[in-house]
Amino acid sequence: MPEVLRAPLVVEFPFTRSLGPVQSAFLTGLRERTVLGVRTGDGRVLVPPVEYDPVTAEELRDLVEVHATGTVTTWAWNPDPRPQQPLATAFAWVLVRLDGADTALLHVLDAPGPDAVRTGMRVRVRWAAERTGAITDIACFEPCESEPAPLPCDHSGSFPRTATEPATEPVTEPVTGIVAPARLDYTYAPGRAQSDHLAALAERRIVGERCPSCRKIYVPPRGACPTCGVATGEQVEVGPRGTVTTFCIVNIKAKNLDIEVPYVYAHIALDGADLALHGRIGGIPYDQVRMGLRVEPVWQDGARHPDHYRPTGEPDADYDTYKELL
Image (cartoon, rainbow, N blue to C red; front, top):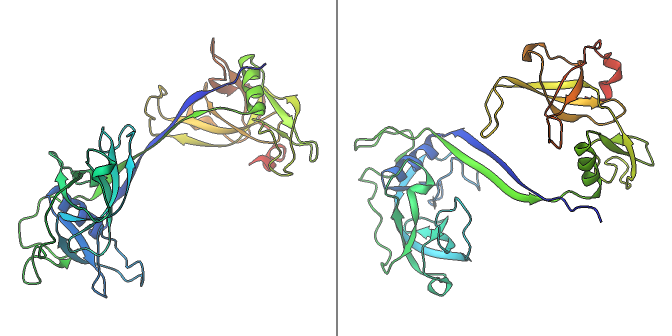
């Protein structure tokens, strides 16, 4: 019986974005232990604030300060927190309508167990000891017994105001951008076709599968033809040489990847294949890589797949031989 392959896989990247005036004010407020919403044309207060009314699409700038206390509108218990979640111990995901707001904010509630959580319970913000201008400046919510109080201030105070209007009190440097880490980690188990492909790579062979209907050869194989929708099973060895069809120059060094930038990542149409695969190009200056460049795989001892592709020294392929694979 063939070995069942499994491997941990992590997809991770930092998502960097700039902030408009409303989001900037909201995150700057959190850093100063203040929760801001935005007032719509019909008087509703939205927390967290948005830049456009979700009903009318009207631009919103009228900032409103709300309380750091509120009411749980719904919740779900999380008994097994994952890494990087707000709390290391079991907690409840909650939607909290803060006093003075008309919408609910998603966050976490620190509670001893699900029996201690209920819809309608009163909670308050627990501020993080160190605040940087992010939603995590609210460390969590915690139960409290307070009743809804009057709004922090009325129209005669510093709120509400527009997002572009300066505050009456001294303001520290505003938060103008955020970096949100995105991460997905899971265990990947390839199917029959990809397992056969990986087993062949371990022998320094590259195999694909031919569609019985359109006769195209797909590398890596998928077990079915993406065009015809029929199962594939006939294995065909391709390459190992191929042609660069298109490429990009990578200038940002990836975390945990020991490759100096800049380098080239390319689509490579292996000889005999009808689908281009991905591969790094080495053995040539990055600014000399070009469409039509003929390349071959370079293997390292003990590796289960090619480390990179290098030029073969052959003349460049004619455009007509790979134009259908762009």
